[in-house]
Picture 1 (cartoon, helix red, strand yellow):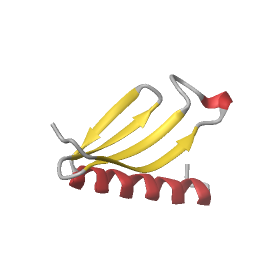
Picture 2 (tube, rainbow, N blue to C red):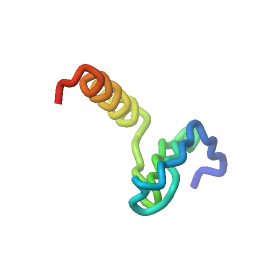
Picture 3 (cartoon, rainbow, N blue to C red):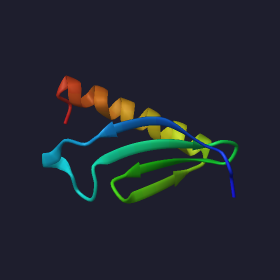
Length: 69
């Protein structure tokens, strides 16, 4: 069990989009994993998997901005 957790990102979700809570939080469980909390759901990633996930989200964001959906 890791004793040090560092929050590396936080956003409040707009009231009309709340599914199961009002937060999106990304935590670095230093030396172990990255946790992404969306409402009361937690997704656990290895560091490599999180970086691949982040790249995918960034690519999707660019596609949405261009209207490629």
